Amino acid sequence: MISTFPRVQRWSCYEGFWYFPMFLEGLMSAQDHFIPQSTDIFITSCPKTGTTWLKALTFAICTRSRLSGSSASSLLTKVPHDCVPLLEYDFAQNPMKRDRAVPLVSTHVPYMGSSKAVINIS
Image: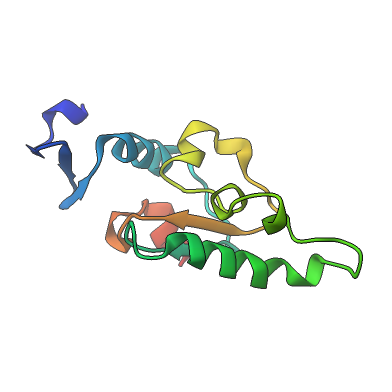
């Protein structure tokens, strides 16, 4: 199906936005299978605009109340991309990978390119 979309170099146009094929496959899968929760917090950014820092800061803020004096942040042993899954990649690979205790979801998809379920819950 993706092969039928308009292409320029390696980018494919889908619903008016340009995507790299690997992420387009994941986006289409997420649109079909991802079920957002009302408590989800979406971290949305363009690629290469500080996504790693944004994920780290958001994760640290959202999980700080879970840390006691003796426990350490997951960010000391994992990279931010492992702490906050990417909607169009991680959920497409394994929709059940999600840690319900951390309601964070990262995406590079524009708001209007999000699944209807995400738009309706927001």
